[in-house]
Each structure stands twice: as C-alpha cells, then as structure tokens.
Image 1: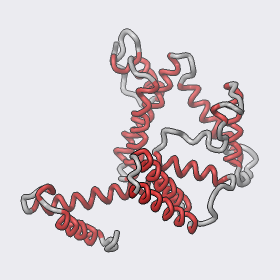
Image 2 (image 1 turned 45 degrees about the vertical axis):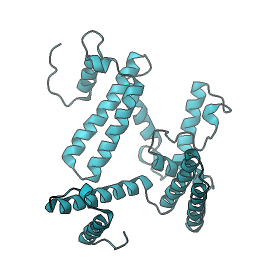
Image 3 (image 1 turned 120 degrees about the vertical axis):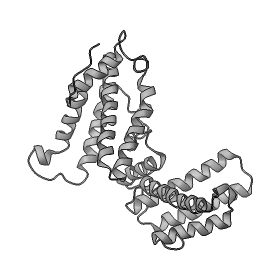
Image 4 (image 1 turned 135 degrees about the horizontal axis):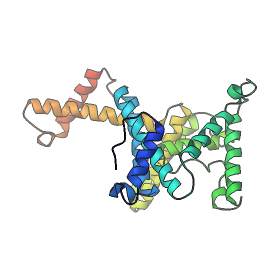
Length: 279
C-alpha cells in the first residue's frame, strides 16, 4: 500500500491504524492483537508519560503522549472492527462528559456545590448499569461506592483511591493518630506471624495490611503513596549508583565490597545530597 503523507491530523493516525490492522495487507503482529494483549502496553505508556513529566523532559513528553494517543486509537480501531464503537464515539463521549461535569463553565456560571462531581459520577455509573441491564443486586453492584475504582491501577494508588471513596461516605479516621496506631498494630501482627512460622500466604496478607494502612497515612497527609514510593525508588537508584561509582574508582564492583563499606558509601551519598543522617 502507498506510504501515507506526513500529517499532524488525528484522522491520519486513525487511517494508519486501520492500515496496520487490514486483514490482507496489514502488519501480522498488529492484526493478531486484542484488547487484552494491548492493555499492558496502554498501562506502560501511561507510566512513561508520568516519567517524562517527573523528569520535566518536554521532548520525551511529546513523544510519550503520542504513544499514549496511539493506544486510544488502537483500542478504538479494534472496537470499530467489532461493531462496538469507533474513535468518533470515544471523542464524543469525553466531550459530552466534560461539558456535563462543568456546568459552571458551560451552564449558569455558578460554581458547583461540594460533592457535585461525586454525585455526577455516581449518576453516570448508575445510568451505565441501567443501560447494560445490570441488576443492583448483581456482581457490579456489590459496592456502589467503590465500583469504578479501576482494578488495573498500581496497588498503592488503588488502595488510596478505595480509602478516599470510603471516606466520602464517612468511613474514615478523623486524623493521623489512629492511623499510626494501626500501623503499629499491623507490624506487630506480621512479627507474630513470622514468629509462629506462618505460611507465605499468611505473611503476604499481613504485609498487605501494612502497605494498605501506609497508603491510608499518605492519603491523610495529602500525599500520593505511589508518587512517594516512586521518589524513594529514584533516591535508592541515585545513591546506589554513587556506591558503584566510588567502588569503580578503586577498580572494584559491589560484589567485591561488603555491607559495612557500602553503608559508609551510602552515608557519603546522603551527605552529598544534604539529606538528614537518618534518611
């Protein structure tokens, strides 16, 4: 097939995706993909967008946003082939939603009262369930409050969102004091399970409880636990790279060192960053 001309048009991108999925002339790899096989790439591209933002790299952000946009076009093309919906339906849906959720911009100009967006989303969710013919006693209605928190979110982010949704209806601690008490309690339970030589499944459950309540602490502090852990990961990589660099100056690798020396170099890395000694 002829090479498509250079373009910045969304319609051109849709045409390219249709070409790639064409049964007789398309790309064999693209043709065999499904929603399920593409979904992991969609999640990965969203993370790469977030990473570019974290690094304040506008060139990378432009590129990664393009990759993420491709995912929307890819899923829309597959849905169109199945007769479910097409890209115009996706665009129309989000346009309608943004107008509906911003009556202060597109309506009477009055700022919505507290809780407007939550009620709006609940109404939209109920309408979707009704249109699908789902019973309020069925699987999708087990928890109306938590129903639309995506399962594919990273676990820490999902924990904070679940807790936040529950907090909206009053299921929440009033401040951080009971949260800290719960952290102490959960750590004690994990220690007890370890002492009792409990099976891995029980230890996993207790560890999960600790992480869940830590996510709750982050929410109470107004901090995203996923972002906090991401920053900690970056800090660990940065400081361990310092250890590797210092050892390399002596012609050695970490394997040729020991914990005592690497701890000392770790402290050097912290000092170089101006971090508190116990960070």
